[in-house]
Length: 533
Image (cartoon, rainbow, N blue to C red; front, top):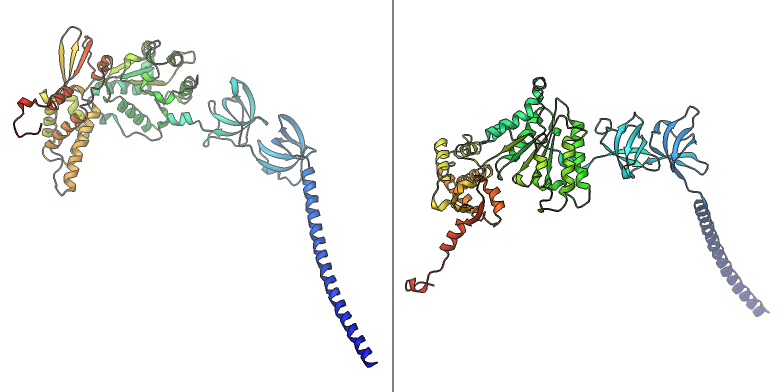
């Protein structure tokens, strides 16, 4: 009996242990199911939110115009003007003309959006009032649009000729767009060249100075004599003879009057593009800008450098047919219906023979100034601009200048450059002096300065000497010995600057001839024994 009871107790204990294990497993299972249920609830809530978000209708952007007396707002949405209700939580003081409002499906403004930052670039033709503009868009289409509140250009109001970004959906000018083409034409820094720093061309400087200054300093006197200010000036001559220096001096002169932006610098190749009509448009914009900025007290100067690249003779066959449209565009701007008051156009070219005659006629180009290559006196004046008493000089400055000029203008065999043959059979030998220019003389002084600098670095205390200048002349001559590198006689007629009424028919380089003779090998029978052949 005792054994049966003991067995029963053992069996019951084993069953109790199993029941405890099953209970523990059930508790763990319940906890896991509870966790999964919670996760399912969270996921279900997220899916419900996503479903609600995806099922919401899209919001419409509308551009705010102004508030009405009844508390509603005047807006433009998708090109439609409408009156809508504003939500109470939108701050009214933050609403400005042109700003976006976010609308719900009932077209109620529920939030404030950003300003439009993309659209079309249009040109301002007229400013009607502080709210409206007349613009020119694509295909020269004219429209009246609204102006965004507070839109200014560097603290000045918009004016005709400016370009603005227009939101086409709301017809509002959002911001000013700075025109890159015009930025490239304006001088960002004032040149430090003044008239007194240009040597050897005093007559030309006086004419240009009077053309720019006198008509605007004494307008009453000119009006009394019924004399108009010159409309255009042509500076022409061989390269390096001061055409660009004169332009820089004019810019400096205007800047002293507070008018640095009154000088527009145009390089011929700068306006050329491959797009049909684009070069003509740029020329019109340059002249329109000049007309807008010009006043009797502050004239505008337009400087065309390398003018022959833009305004070539029509039908010359030396370029494409581009000149057939660019030249008439320029002529229309010079003396068209609109007129050109208080604007002076200066052309610079070393190939004036390629410029169309219609551009050069009186009434368009009133003053023509030839800048020739410098003679002895002019060369000394130019040298004295760059070699002056403020520099370390070894010896007497006037003596150095005189000896340098004598050496420059020496007609020695070692300075022979070209031989010209004219149509009458006459021949003329050109020397190094016949190709001098202001730029070349400036470079000679720079070479002499480098020689003196090298000695100073090595410990010597001497300044610029006569020997330095003579050596610099030889170096410059050696560096330009390859100048005669073209067989085009017309090109050489322009490069040499010779205009004696005779036509050059042949050109022979004396430098290349001498170098060929120096390098000519000796004949075997003439060679001394023991020498390398």
